Length: 359
Picture 1 (cartoon, helix red, strand yellow):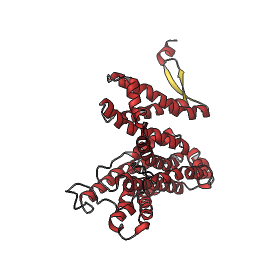
Picture 2 (spheres, rainbow, N blue to C red):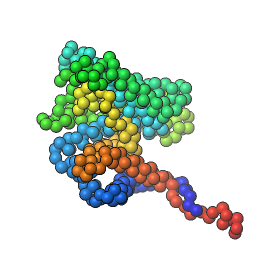
Picture 3 (cartoon, helix red, strand yellow):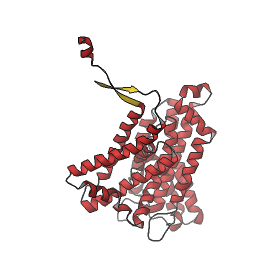
Picture 4 (cartoon, rainbow, N blue to C red):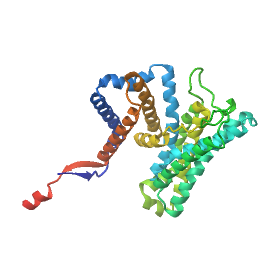
């Protein structure tokens, strides 16, 4: 029989090579899946990963989708390094969008150029407030942050529905569940004419080195790493577990709330009940695939964004179901988990119990 034996210490080559192996396995499994569906594997992979980047508009859409994924994953990585598992970034993103939308539809004619900065701060505050519920229950009542953050996601989604079907619904929208469109002072400016990519990308680009500095060079980042790698040593050194929980959940919640602002004040331009991108859940895969490193997360966000737009391209070109991108995300996650197991464990042959007794 075969059993798993823990390695004494995983090599750095295996740690950093595992995501690349997972991506390669995903391509192989995806090609086999396309062949089983009766599609030429190479043509299908070309439609999924190459065709979407054939023009400037495709590249801009890639960056547009990668930007919120990267923001959310950077925040989650801070918590994951400390073994605090925030699974509810999707709900925190919704609440960031709600807080920003509240300002945009009630004060957009009064605040002028200060409108967008105020929305950014409000969105971060919304994500912080939603994550603070999780932090309080985890730090002081020892509730599972996984369950609490996940359940709060559905509460946030219902809040969005209540607002767009009720008090915030646009009276001129013919009963469609959406708010009024934001004015120009409540929107990020396009980077180029004719494309949807906007200046919110600059926030993401600035967040990548800031996250690296926080995690690698700051004393707080060092404390959080110790809390994750050696909890007993952290307690012995006097590091507060409750403080660490509050910090990482507020950071991840604020980042998710900021991502919500970049969506409603960017390509969408309002709040509506059809906005369910799933970025908060996909960002978990992005953080894991990027090995919780800011640069790796940025690259992983580009790959996951390519799966989003590639699924749409394959749907049009090959008449494949829209869910093909979700299937690839699932394959990537399973391959990554399998590689992660083999990083820390090795396969070992062991005689079966019956054979030992017979001998």
